[in-house]
Image 1 (cartoon, rainbow, N blue to C red):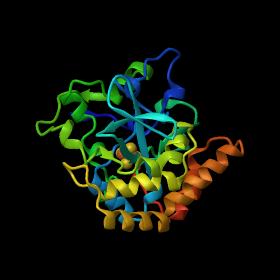
Image 2: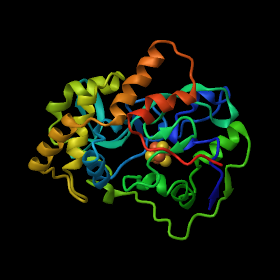
Image 3: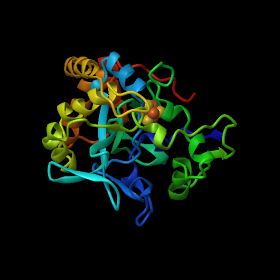
Length: 287
Ligand code: SF4
């Protein structure tokens, strides 16, 4: 498998705003499960990865995703029917996206929802060489190829031309992690639907707060693979840690949002002031 990533980062962005009119981009909104949020290309995290980001002070980099479901088990929470496992709301935890000034696919700079760890200037990942680099990113797009599912590389080629997926043979060691074994490791369940009524209403309205997401992050950190059980002590510690967390990510999210609200023109080079000066790791560039 060989990919050509320079000038792309399609899998780290929600680039629907740059797609040609009528472009079929709904891969995350097909099938029985439909996310409550409207952000594309979520990177789901395992419970170990959630704990690692919490330990690194990056609670603000994580968000929860719940689903509506057609013709399947659900539970009403906060006026919303959400997919459930044994009556408990099911959810994923993934990396947050924030509007950043990016210019992928030779386009002019645009404000596009971008992974918190994407450097807008180089379009490279700031944590690629760190222990926290998510498995989902490290196995992409190989796992899609192994499952015969369209990759983001191919979607970018369809929309913008070029050669992104240079060699489409899946890696020999591909082992896509899907199925019932994901419960407690990548698919989590919340033990107390009453506690998240307001949070679920806000998630469905696109108004979820960092505190709302932190509740789900703490439950995910207190979960264990193969079981619906949530460890109370672990949950309390994770909740506290999430509340205290303060990394460069938090300040950067706030400032990007302020710049968008102020109507600022998108300029990828402003990443130096917004992210690097706050302590974000650098990226090597493509030279
Ligand atoms: S962690 Fe890195 S590779 Fe993964 S989506 Fe974010 S920027 Fe992209």
